[in-house]
Amino acid sequence: MATPAPDDDDTVRVRPPAAKPKNPPLKLIFFATAAGFLITGAAIAAFALRQSAPAAIPIDTESEAQIDATQPCATKVSHFAADPDIVVIDFPSLTEQGLTLNRVAALIEKARLPRDRVLNDVELNQAIYDCGDTIESYYYGHDYQAADLAKFFALAAAENIQLNPHELWLKSLLTQLNWLTPGAGGAITSHATGAIISLPAATPPIDQRMRAVILHHEISHGAFYTIPAYATYATDFWISLTPRDRAAFTNFLGREGYDTTNTTLMLNETQAYLIFTRDPLFFNASAVGMTPDHIETLRTNYIANIPVPWLQPMANATLPTGPPETAMCPVAG
Image (cartoon, rainbow, N blue to C red; front, side):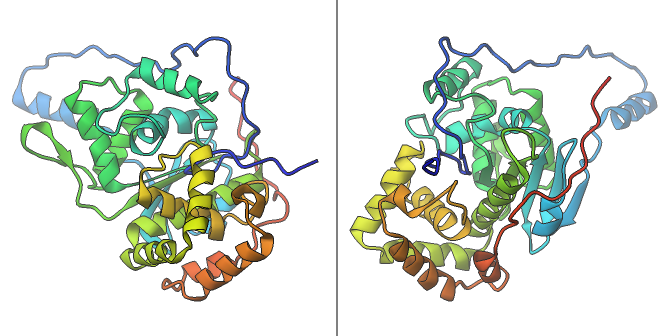
């Protein structure tokens, strides 16, 4: 059986093309509401404010190996040990990941969608349907720099887009990280150098090996966003490619649903797939119409001069050959 062609991701998607549903999906996003209570008295009001303030989101610091060995039963957040500016969100399911980040993906990098406004629920569901996707399969992993996340929340506020509880949780996380800065007129900006990357738990259709490949791919995106020297290196590599090679990668990424008019996106995805996605289920020479020897030459030349000490061995790393033992999450009774 031929190796399945890689689908899209920003991420990594490795499923055969999904059959388009007969009807657009119903809304799956529900919004919680709560009644407010008026409490008089300055001291009582201050106490109530403290009690109602959202609890801080726990954030660990973990290596790639530690994240690989985790089977999250609830959403888990970590600074990446080699580069703490990379924040890893480890979701317990593709559904929770999609509800949190699909609308961001639609704004930042999905092809044929607006870059100057946030989709509402109906538009987002239609965009997912038009790709033949579901909330779960729109992306298998995500990566975004702080400035793009600030843009998303600023536009959503300006347009009065009602965000779902998962997206509001993300806003709380970014606020806790001091990545969002309220400005005049309610505008939100960010001068942070950080980046968010995400991956799902090893639950069907994702197995433990796929999870490891997704994480490896996404870490390289995080480095691209947070380390200027690496972003420059990846850019110079893209420029050094022949027009034919650049066109091959651009065509591949276009088939995967990326916005091919965004050159930075093209070169960022190229380095992630070519160098850090060493599984033929996700990426192989035939996907870009090249010979294996040519792919290996491009990889060898790229890896030889990577200017980030911790990233170079990662580029040569062999991923796990089989799923390790992982604890099962308890089933709600």
